[in-house]
Image (spheres, rainbow, N blue to C red):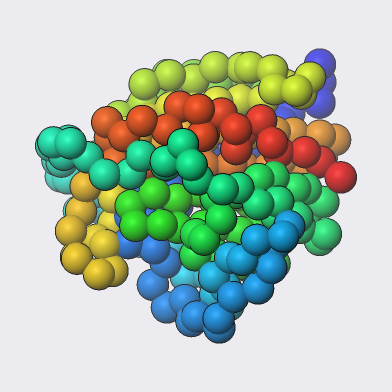
Length: 229
């Protein structure tokens, strides 16, 4: 119980400080393509660098406070097709594996990884629970911080769930995307964020797509495929 409370406390701080990661509709700036390589029998385009987090800094925070939620797209793109093939991705240094859509552009940074396809994407990062964490529970301040932190975030739900016998924390929220690198367009996104914790480690999985896209089954497949090694 103590471990779970400590983990949940750290997750709250982690979520507040990194909410913008899942708002990258255009993909990370500055990533350099180096071709592709095999991941679990499938080919995933490879990139070599992870960009700085968007929406950080005092000027970005000031602008974020005045940001308005974008109107949802009519007939939004972003549905992951039922015919989509998935491949296994493993991180030996991170000690985890999960299934990801085949063909999505990959960006790695140590044991953290991000996959993008147009306005869809997912991110997984590993963090360690600091020894000074307390067992303070979540409060209404979390929602206030998220909604005032940029991207015109609207939190829809926060819940503790069980996935494959593991206890996890799930956030659902809407946000504005960053500008798409090809079209320079921004869209309204829906996001699911999952936190899986074991001992002193927390895995943060984020999934995003244009608001209104139908990815329920595919997101369930991805979130349920996560395993610690």
